[in-house]
Image 1 (cartoon, rainbow over the protein chains, first blue to last red):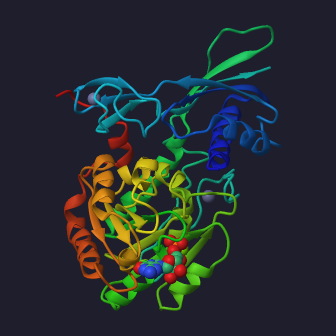
Image 2: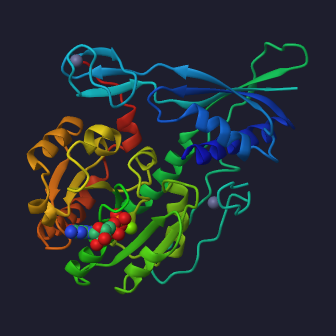
Amino acid sequence: MHELSLAMSLLEVCEEEATRIGVKKIKTLIVEVGELSGVSVPALDSAFGIASRGTVAEGAALSIRNMPGTGWCLSCERAVRIQDPFRSCPDCGGSRILPTGGMEFCLKEFVCD
Amino acid sequence: MCVECGCGSSGKMPAKEHKGIAFSHRHAHGNDDTAPSKATPSGGTTGEDRRFSVEREILGRNNRLAEDNRAFFKEHGIIALNILSAPGSGKTTLLEQTILSLGGSLPLAVIEGDQETSRDADRIRSLGVPAVQVNTNAGCHLDAHQIAHSLEELSLSPGMLLIIENIGNLVCPALFDLGETSRVVLFSVTEGEDKPLKYPQIFRGADLVLLTKSDLLPHLDFDTAKAMNYLRSVNPSGEILPLSARSGEGMDRWVAWISAQREGAGAMSESPTRSGEAHGTPSGG
Ligand SMILES: Nc1nc2c(ncn2[C@@H]2O[C@H](COP(=O)(O)OP(=O)(O)O)[C@@H](O)[C@H]2O)c(=O)[nH]1
Ligand SMILES: [Mg+2]
Ligand SMILES: [Zn+2]
Ligand SMILES: [Zn+2]
């Protein structure tokens, strides 16, 4: 359920940026969500629907770009693909992995009328 | 406006008057010069639609506020411990026993996080230690912003020990840096050996893992060696300490660990931040 506070932080950034550029209404948010970020997209989507009421982004659509999880296996000494932060190395099965990509939760763009 | 506390968009909130040192939460949201804001038209107008490039990390706001808290702790030699665990692993009981063990030997304050009620803060206050209760309602973790506001309410003094009891939850609190000096995760022997494998993120970030309720071991088939191995596999460098708040086993080592943290506080000014570590790129080899 931390998606509610994440949605609120997202909306706060929207309000800041919209005020700065003089936009009254946001139609679509383009958000990058990494596979390893711990953010649940369905939970974020419903939290955003509730939290956005009365804000500049009320009724806006969330357009999600899923970013793949990548890591560095300290045993194999090479980059590996990881699906979630709990997974072990697909090659050696070890768990000494440093996440290197897929942690993002980033507002990339918004679209207005 | 601050959507979490609704405390206005002025960007400044006067710090309360204290006898000791006062924390001023400078509201790094709203009109914040340090926030890289760069909404710019990004072309590609389809019909009447206008696109704007924003490029802002959302968790960045929590991290900025956490860095403010961390800088404040460092400046005043305050050791802040973020205590995390599943509900019922013994956080509040440990806090009570810790307060009794320390016996007033060092200045202490507590921030209690719970979804509802002030029961835990009341338990701490009844021992004569100042405590602030944060109720998160639907929220499942404490964040740096709530800590900043709690610091404004507490009477703080240099070199003090600040203990933060996070919401009982093994998932979300791991994501939110509070600016703490160290993270302590409690793992009770009633939870099963494989907890670290099921919730590796929270165990990976721990500076110290306390294996709590060790007095119950004779009554359980909990395999301590197995649990230690699982812990090591997700967190090779953190310390592990078996402890019982009931029997007192391990309390002396826990208190010694706290003292070591306080002694190390002066020398820690160069340590990298948690977020910096988490996003660090391995430098090959
Ligand atoms: N046997 C035993 N029980 C404990 C110990 N520490 C806490 N408990 C019990 O575990 C329950 C939850 O403890 P509490 O401190 O409220 O957990 P919290 O939710 O993590 O704050 C209570 O019934 C405590 O009495 C311990 O060291 N040994
Ligand atoms: Mg408690
Ligand atoms: Zn490997
Ligand atoms: Zn605020």
